[in-house]
Length: 290
Image 1 (cartoon, rainbow, N blue to C red):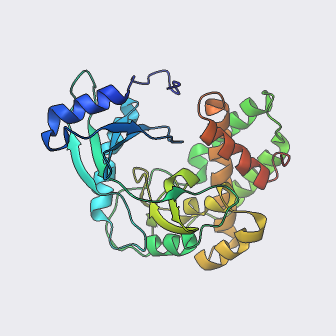
Image 2: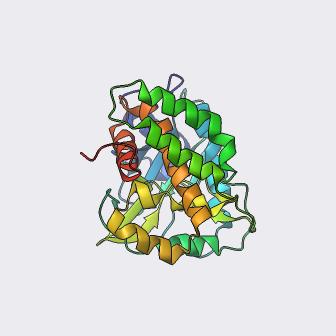
Image 3: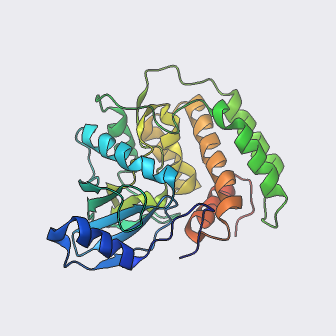
C-alpha cells in the first residue's frame, strides 16, 4: 500500500485478521480481503461475505470512528442503505486506535460522468431529517477554508498539472461573495464523493462514510454536481434539490476547494482521488477537457 500521509500507520491483511481474531472470536474464521478504495482516512477490508473492517490510517481518522457511530445511530429513515456499525473495538496488536466492523453493503461505486438516479432525492431526504446532530465537518462558512484554498490554488499552479489558476480564483471569489446560508442548519453528508456512493443498475442504493455528516450549510451536498455529474445532467440535479443561486455558487466553491486541496496532496499517492479532482476542475472550467 502506498503511504498517503507522513503519520500513517502501517496496516495489512494480516493485521486486520489478527485484530478480529483477538477481539471478536465469532468472526475469527472469516478471511479479510483488501478493498480497492479511493478513501484517504481508513484502510477497508471485506471480512467474509457480510462484513467490513475499517482501520484508521491516522490519529485524526481514529477520532472519526466514534463520531460516525453516533451519526449513524441518530439518523432517521433514508431512501438508501447506510452502513450498520456492528462493533467498535479497542487498540490491540500494536494498532494504536479504535477500529470498527461494519455490515457489507452491495453495490458498485459511482463513476464520473455516468448517471446516478436517486441522488438528488437522497440529498433532499437527508436535509429533511429532524434528528439532532453534531456540526457537520464541512458545514461552516466558506471563509473558514479561504486561506487553505488560496494556498492550494497557488501550489497547484506551480505543478505540471494542466490548470487555469485564474479561472479557479474566479470560481472561488464568486463563492465567497455569495450570500451565506441563513436558514436553519440541516443535515448534510459532507463527503458525497463518487467512491462513497453505491449504485445498483444506475440507481443510488447506498451511501458510505458518514464521519463528516452533521448539520450545517446544505451547499456542501451539492458537490456531486461537479465531481460526478455532467453539464447534461447537472441542471436536473439542481432542480430537484432546489438550489438557489447563492447555494449553487457556494456548492461550486466547495467542489473547487476540495479538488485543489486534494490534487497536490494525493496526485502521486491516490489515483482515485486525484483523478476525481481533475474531473472536478474540468467540469468547473479550470482545466482542459482530456
